Length: 235
Image (cartoon, rainbow, N blue to C red; front, side, top):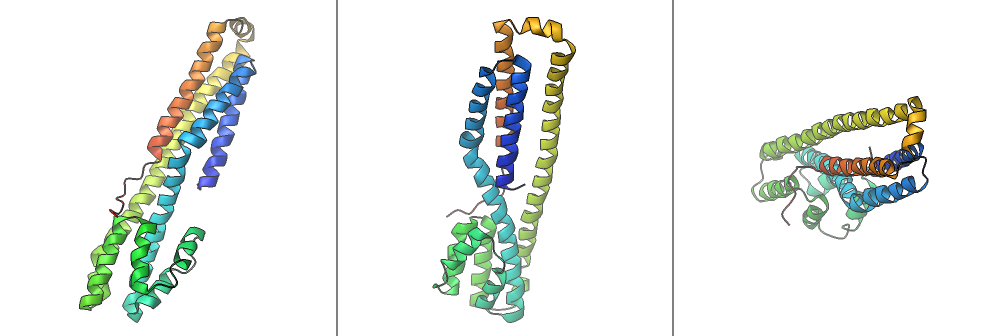
């Protein structure tokens, strides 16, 4: 899922829960207040971390592709410029903007400047390997063997983490979905008893508090979900 996709998905979920709150309480003000709190939390409190998560995830993939493509090309042509051009084919929009801003620099400086873009310790390791190769020569595939293994490990760790997060998200959504279904069944199945409960302000406050707890639960879950434990560069 992309950042845009998650924003759309989160917006739809918030709307559905607000409509459910209206259905459960038959009160127009409760879902409005709920929606305001939900969207402020989702887009303001979690928005920055959500965007940072998707940027970092994309750049880990890009860094892995860049390192592997660069080393393979360098092993064939033994040219830093040719390897750089090969590694930067078909870039993303953000990566294209970055590499276009470096076109006037020597190839060695371009590689150094990309440290800020990728901001990963694996890329710092890549720079060190390239510097050693430039000074001492030899076969780059031998020099970069550990680097390529580490790059693959980082990529696989990210893929495994993404799959794990997707599984946990499905479990979380299923549990809350079942909880909300119970509310719907109670609202429909016990309509006479439920109608009398709706006249109690205490009941309405408790229901609203339950939905606020849902927001808190989602906030904690998403906040933990958006953590990537892959070491960044120490710039």
